[in-house]
Amino acid sequence: MSWSEMQPLLSQACWDTLYMVGWSTLIAVVAGLPLGVLLVLTDRGGLLQNVVANKVIGQLVNVARSMPFIILMVALMTFTRWVTGTTIGRDAAIVPLAIGAIPFFARLVETAVREVDGGLVEAVQSMGGNTWTIVRKVLVPESLPSLIAGTTTTIVALIGYSAMAGTVGAGGLGDIAIRYGYQRFETQLMWITVAILAVVISVIQFAGDFAARALHRRGGRGGPGPRLRLLKAEEPAAADVTRAAAPGDTAPGDAAPADVSKVA
Amino acid sequence: MITTSGLTKVYRSRGREVTALDGVDLHVREGEVFGVIGQSGAGKSSLIRCVNLLERPTSGTVTVAGRDLTALAGRGPRAGRELRQARSRIGMVFQHFNLLSSRTVRDNVELPLEILGASGRERSRRALELLDLVGLADKAGAYPAQLSGGQKQRVGIARALAGDPKVLLSDEATSALDPETTRSILQLLRDLNRQLGLTVLLITHEMDVVKSICDSAALMEKGRIVESGTVSELLATPGSQLAAALFPVGGDATGEDRTVVDVTFHGEAATQPVISQLARTYNIDISILGAAIDTVGGLQVGRMRIELPGRYEDNVVPIGFLREQGLQIDVVDGGDHAADAPADRALLVKEGAK
Image (cartoon, rainbow over all chains, first blue to last red; front, side, top):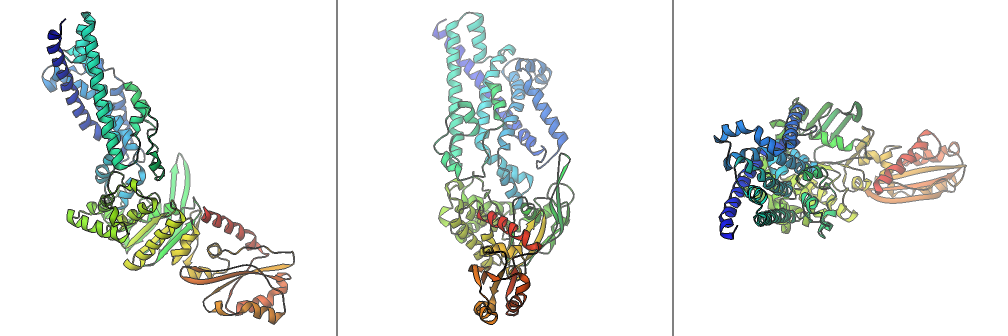
């Protein structure tokens, strides 16, 4: 296969992947953020403590998360048809991708929000703030670096899931690698796809890390965000000295490994 | 200004009950600095959290500025609008500052004003004014992480004042700070108390805090208030643990047949040469085991631990003489009270030293 043949295939595949991953990330963030916050708020000792709701949401999230994506895609076909009018193609793939990513992102949000120092919540309560104020002015802004890191993780996971979207004819880089690279022995094309995927993932990871770290630095807490440390196992940054001045800060990243290992 | 009556807080977890507050009656007068002191686990934190109902008391009432907050609270765990409004009139400062790391110093101070719904211009005017008041006008654009502990607490204080409160609650506000910074923060609190007529309720485990700024103090033990009163009342109370801890004098009896007496001078009596009078009148030898003069709650106080020869029974007359001079006399030797009191004192002093 010559480059002139491969080039349109690849550019179309890149575009397909970005389209699917972009939309599903957007939906996952929009739906996962409130879900994750709700998981924290309704938990025992939370601001909206509601053990039943917490158990129900938690269970839903667990079931959805443990479902292999390919099965989720098949299982959701009726729903997909109801939403998009079809079960094949790019748009149809967005539905299961988004639904698979919502609980995933919700768990990441939950861990991020849990890391926010309870003292801050108490401070805002003592000022007369209500729960909505606390969510808007404390929980989300204070966990923003971790939320961004979580979004990065979600995007990377979605790129992985999207490889399976080829099974419903949605195209994308993963689909090219399987159909041409594996089934037609176009080894060269497969390696190009792999290289593109590697580059795309690196760029996204870099951009995410950069944004999270920039926010952290603004907050001045120094060092990479909790999630970043797990993904990259970096040595603690020199700026950690500034942390010592704030003994009230909670230690980062206790419950995170479980979430990240799923991606890895 | 702040009154609690029969305040009880019981924590239940996994079938176990822990009584943090056991019928606390506290009265803080308007415009005073009131210190609650006690060891860790004595219930101080629960008490101050119950005052603005961050912690719901199991029973009892809390009245702040004439409003019964416990009645506003309602039944559910969530704070209703009225309680939230009342809270916005009570400032609170925390041990670990609790500043939002994602906001600048100025935005942190503006936060309570945002909650109160002040306009943008009003907010920034007030925030800069408050930062000026606490001496941090030049740090308005900095992030909390760029500040030292003392500066962070100043921001915390400015933030607590943003809602124009009449009452300030201070939850171990100086416990995370070094002695020098502690002094400057206490000075600031004292100034605010005087300038703004702010009523301050503070809890602490450091005796020095009570000593340097409190008008009144209470000692908490196991969820109960064991002693309370104005500092001068406490100093005038015979056998007061708080007075002894506020103003410790050391020294043990040198032998078996001795009587050790703590003499506290304040007010008029401080100017009289009573010890030499005592020695001349009764012709006895007096050894001084320890002595100090200090300012406690704005009062000049002297305390001396002296030793008289002979047992207590032999010294009834000289001790009576000292009492007649208007001095406060605590006999340290003998008796049940003396056996356990020094241990308590030692503990309190140790807490203070931490």
